[in-house]
Structures are given as structure tokens and as C-alpha cells.
Length: 148
Image 1: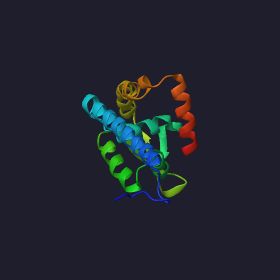
Image 2: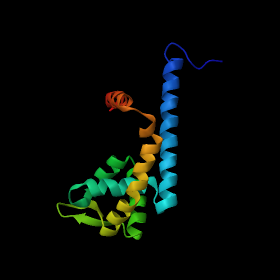
Image 3: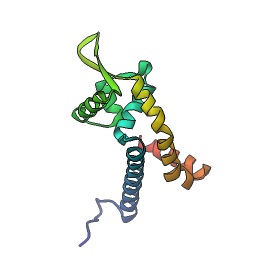
């Protein structure tokens, strides 16, 4: 039985899609494992800390943060709860919107991020960049830009 028909994906298209999924999953699992082992920090937690560190005033509205880290609002709320218990993030009320909340990176969170960043970058280098030359990177960037 074949699942492919004239309205579905070609074998080549399906193969590329599956390769992209597997590559992303393998890289993500590797980064997650390395960050947990070396810093007891999940990849999603690292991403939240990084987004806050890069934001003006080290703070973002919770809705904006959820969009940046690709988590549901409820998933982000649970994660920020955990990071707040660990002292890495705090919440602040929004002065212009009584219902709005900001997530704010604490000094302890910035320190933890700084400690974990070399591990994160080494994982990216070993799992992606070492396998690609300059031309590969240029082509890959051009292809991924078409998908944004």
C-alpha cells in the first residue's frame, strides 16, 4: 500500500521533511542532554533565560516571551514558575496593564546563563557547524530564510 498519491508529497519531498525532523530532534536532544548534565538546566529553560538576557532591561511580557520560545502560554507559565522558584527569573506587574506580567531575568539567572552558554555553543558547533563549510552555511541560511 502506498500513502503517496498525486496530491501528496513526492518521495523526495517526504524524505527531505523527515531528514529535517530527525536532524532537529537529534540536535535538540544532544543540547538538552549536555545542558542538563553540566548545568542542571533544560534546553527550554536556557532558551527563556537567553531571550530575557537579550531583551531590553532583561524583561519581556509573558505573551511575548511565549512567542519567542515557541511554548504555549500555560507551558511558559509552568516553566517560569519553576525558574522563579530557582531564583533565576522573577515576575513584575506591568504598570500600564494591570493584567500584564513581565518575566525578568535575575542576576542569578544571568550568572547561570553565562555558565551554561559555553556548553550550549559547543553543542551547536559539534552537532551543526563542524559538519558544514562556509558554502554549506550560506546555502542553508538561504534555504531556511525561505521558510520563515
